[in-house]
Image 1 (cartoon, rainbow, N blue to C red):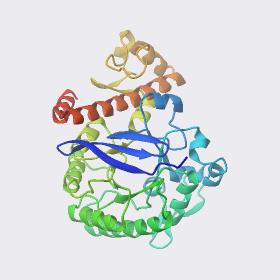
Image 2: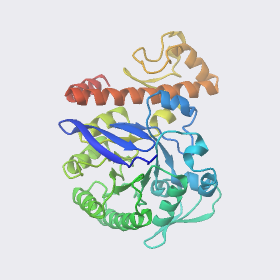
Image 3: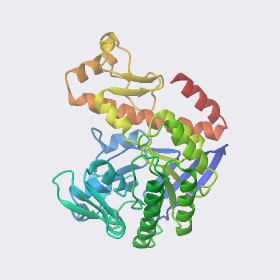
Image 4: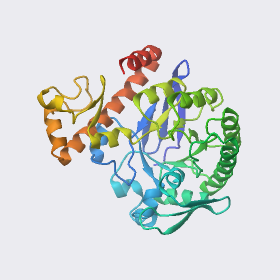
Length: 370
């Protein structure tokens, strides 16, 4: 049986907000979509079968971390990341560029060699070039592959951002050459340029000339305000190719997602729902709550009575407060699953309101409640 080619189609729009469908040989992905983060071949504290039951249709894993442990060759030896972690869903892997910036205190960027840095685990010297990043992602057998880019820290220095953007464009071209042609997989370019509108447009135009299966907006969620992030998206939304998926990397809160959908974004990932779940912060239709708070010791209601896609309402806030305050592992498992489920319910509601032409009203009501 022939494998299905990667494709994307916009199915409906409500102003700039879009509903679409990504088709892969591993399954279809309804957009706007939120991708749970499985950094090290696991979405922490949750079984993959339960991830699927929440309605998740794709997950994200991390090239940098998997390159260090257990190593791409070890994963390739069992047939790739899907078999290694028992995941039937499509998998997107990022290039490792963000972790080079965020985790390595001592790194050097060389235009030709790539990123030269020390492992945050054992201090071993590593060189990650655009070609190496793509080769690793091929060994992982990723369905959506990200180009190698440099993700600079937030700065108002135009020359620093311009130099970084030019380097990312050069590395994107090299990534594309190394990726070659594979209609069953996708390669996404990453738009850089910081908070400078002209650099963002220049970056996008250069990437479009190279030609990619999707376009990500990188270099955000690095300390800028929400309004600054939305300004970048407002500047880009009328220039991004209409017939390609648009991915906002590393974002974010429910209000971030709603605002970005309003500006035409299709794909999201963030560690927030899983990391928050492990620390006692729950996302609900009535806002966020810290289940460690003593006021929940007498609250026998479920976390979120409006939750409907998963049987999580059997656990009271009183019980969850006890689990967290006694450091029980089950606490992290329940709340992480709850948060992922809430995010998927939110995405489902977003898609439904776009189709019904009521997204603006839904957006405003949700933001007002927050």
